[in-house]
Image (cartoon, rainbow over the protein chains, first blue to last red):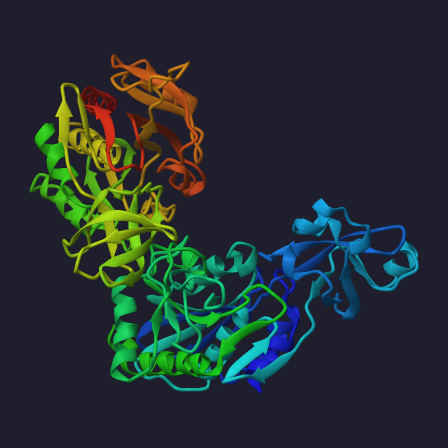
Length: 335
Length: 296
């Protein structure tokens, strides 16, 4: 299954080769280019307005920043990971996927104050079972990236739990769309690199393609959980893909948004509005590239964003695909 | 000048929805003015002249609220661009609906009575302009004053080649410098607001209303070109140096073409982001005259 295969691949920001190679292997009949930033740029071709679909292929993770004399590894987070989600988790390090466990000083040895506060990443270590530094250096190098264990599971009432859904789900949707034909437009796609460390890849992608319009296909936070108050849920699982009116780095093009939401309404595809002006995506740099590119953001509501286990609704994923498909087919040619 | 400032101040200019303020500014331009808008809604007015090009830049957007969670006549919101909403503040919302900021245990909300708002609609403090002698106050008065000073400079005679730019989305840090691709210039003057610190309890006042125009040696986004700053300092107008913690409009633009000689100036403003900001009319006039002097 495409989404499962994508989520199971590794691709911490700046180290996207594995996921990039996999995505490339899923594309046929299109011109592909790997640029210097690590983006995978795909031209489907066609005549008409040039429409860019962009999804980031990198994921949050860890980077090995030190090896202690006793063989334990120090690390830094890559992308926004709350240290609360790290403790006791298994990780795979480097291209050889060396197993490690994130640990911390035993609770029995912590003071009351230490037990009551969040454990910071500098007080954690990764245990790979090495006896000493020399042993550890045989399998791990400084700068190696580490990912959470790949998993994909369908559970509950149509929910999916997997690693790196952010934004492999967006990549999956675009890969599915690339198999279709859309007359009247020139479709170009960017699987961008380094989004999680400051949307670094997307600008180069936008400058390369210089599209007339862009749609960023993303995953966004969903906090529809106890004990969050309803007005702070931001999105709701199962209510359809979310449309962003503004976030911290982008104010999407209103006319473009309207064209998408109208297509959703006319085709009975559920959608919702993202209910915050917070967060940020590749749209921030894409819309400011060249002389300004009208850009929209369509995002999949996702619980536990930037953690080892992200949760989405299967229906939302399908609705996101259907909405983009119908929009590219019926609306985009007349933009 | 007061009538120009009034017309500007009565026009909502929320970050991300600057269409109305842009229309108001265009209505103040001479019929012969050459202007265009870029993909971000930024307004560029070109006065063709001699010599190397000069950019006079200001933002035209103001801090605002965006509705995130309407519940009947009550709407939760995100405050953006440095807006400081407070209980009891009156607001005008997109579509002309009026409301008051209320507060409960979960935080602030907009109370629009029986009327409902939609997710993504904006609200701004109710536009107003009151004058007390040399002082005036109203919602986002600092920003409207900067726009007013720039328009006054635009309407003056100059033989220089000048690009007047009214940028969008500056307060929310989304200003796009891509308009510089349409412009040939090697000097940038960014006209901003400066935070006044002349409240009664201040021990050291360095930015007082009525003190003239702030010449910002440094702000959070730009370090000014010292020769350019010293040139303005030598002009026969009231100025004072400032090291500002505010993020000005020109930071990203300064980096255009690999770097453009730039200076950031500001109009001292009290109560930035609150329901009412206060400025001195003489500082607006002073800033306009300083710009005119430079353009001569």
